[in-house]
Length: 277
Length: 151
Image (cartoon, rainbow over all chains, first blue to last red; front, side, top):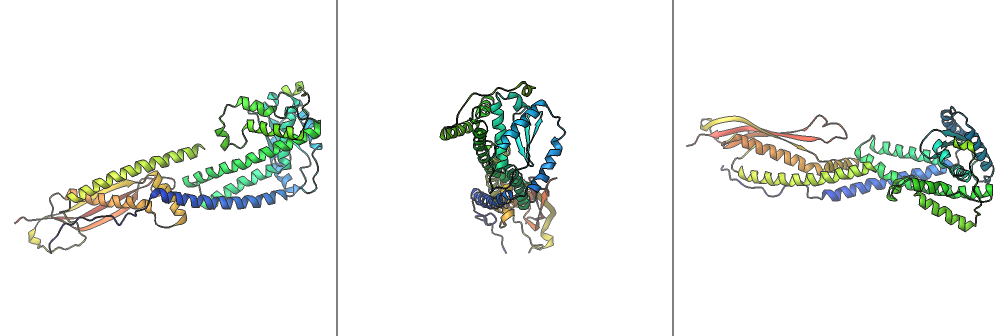
């Protein structure tokens, strides 16, 4: 048999498909599945959260309380607590909703960031910089009312649960942390952030109503956000991925509501010396 | 946010660099395959010539290591979830094997035929079997190069 050299044309071992098309289809599929599962769990969670008994919330809350209990009681803390109690007394009772925590507790912790948190069990954590930086009593009252709004809407539990769902979904789908799951979780997180921005706006509006009920006017409600927007020269774009809305948008929403409801704007009360320490 | 940006940069870089390198490699493979067309490499152990006709018979081997790019690995990772053909790895194996055969032929010099050709493949690199790492594959081709006496 004589060997006749013959060139082979084409390549059967390599498929003629576009890798980019394959990538788009696979990524779209996986993102779709994750979003559907996540949304379903989220809806289920919202149902659970609104009917979670107070006793369970108290247990959760005691975990947080024990951490902050050690912080010493300052005159500023006592004054804030008094302000909070008076605000809380004005919260309208709604028979349909689950009972709110029996008492709200202020914890001031030393921190240079201006922030406040609502944690399970009626715990409100205020960073010391916020108290020092505040321009008026009304401004602080709005911040407290905003946190009370989170309790009224049960956002403090919702945030906890959503994060849990996110973790569970990621672990179940990918088993561990691979680059693929990292990417998908990050994209989902930005959806989550949008959800959280919605909660913040709801708490803002709720706080406005409470402020009006307590003081009969809403002066100073937008002061905190005005200060924030001056301090932070972050671009509007970076807020797309943030948990809180753009401060200027929050001011605009509040001002619109004030106009709509014809709330009064009286003189602001200056801060006592105790808050400045 | 930063992670998404890093991911996108790596994926685009992987896709561009990987595609360019692959095209260049295939061009080179095809040119050299044409050059070595007159040196057959076959898997049979026996040939029709007599032992007395053989001037020289030696073992020749060639190997090649080809790495995955970032984009291909992500694509294969997604494929792992749904199942099906991992198309993105096909060129990798194909290139490694053909390159190994070409290097083996190069080593054979003026031989007339390579008998008993074998190809083996293995994943390579310290991190080849771990998650989150870029692996490479190695292909080794070996056979017996026969040089016949010139009459």
